[in-house]
Image: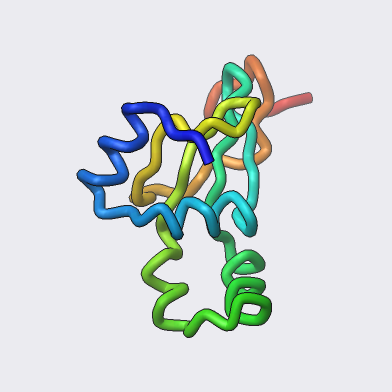
Length: 102
């Protein structure tokens, strides 16, 4: 797994273990961002897979629930953090919030 210097600093500052990043890369849901970056996070389905396949206890999975990472197209981790807002899904290039797509 490859991290940028920025990602390593943020993981240390935010107390995000490399195991959490590995689990995000294996099980996390992917949303695409502007500029081609990918955001990985644990949605309900991913959390359930962790409990069933990896036999991780529910309490441990809940501690990971709000973590996310951003990676480039080659899979290099750019940054990681804890979500404070929902991940914006179904992004349409050029659309602004509040505008309807016709």
